Length: 224
Image (tube, rainbow, N blue to C red):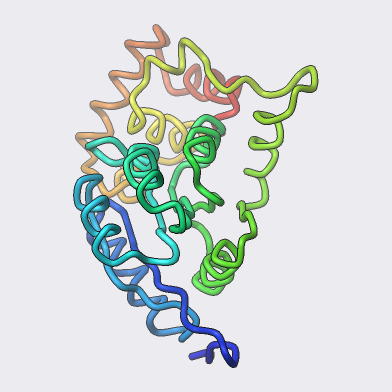
C-alpha cells in the first residue's frame, strides 16, 4: 500500500454505480492499494447518490454514466448547484462520444473507462481533486471536437442514434467489437436473454438485418 504524500489528506471518494459487485470491487481495490484515497460512501441510483453526496460531502465522486433512473448527467444536474466544490469523475464502460460529451457538458471534470487499472484510477482521482481534467487517451479528442468550432468537428447528436436507449448502445458497441452474446452479458452484468432482447430491438429500430450490418452502422457513427 502506498502512503499519502506528506502533509496531504486522503481524497474522500464517493462511488456511484448501479452494480453493487462493481462498487464492491472498486472499494476493495482502492482501500487495499493506497492511502491516498478513502472511500466514504456509495450509491446505486440517482436518488441514493444525491442523498449520499449531500451527507458525506466527498472531495471526488466516481460517477457511472448509465443508470436506470437517469444516470450520471442527472446526478450532476441535481448536485452541482448545491455542492459546487464536489468534483465528479465519470467512470463508465461506455466510450461513446455522445456519452463523454454529455457528462462533461453537465459538469464532470474527467471521464475514464472501466478498463483503467487501479493505480491509474488513483492517479486520476488525485488529479481531478487537484483541479486537472483527466480522460482516457482516446476520449479527449471527443471533447476537443465538441467544444471546438473547427469544420469537421464530430457531431454530438445523431437522430438515428438517439432512437437507441443507453443500454442498447452499450450492447451495440460491444457487439460491433466482435463480442459474443455471452461475453456482452458478462461485461454488462446482464443475462444472455437480455442481450438478445436488446439486439432485436436495435435491429428493429435501425431497420438492419444482422450483426454485420450493425457493426458497420456502429462504426460509421464512431461507436466502436
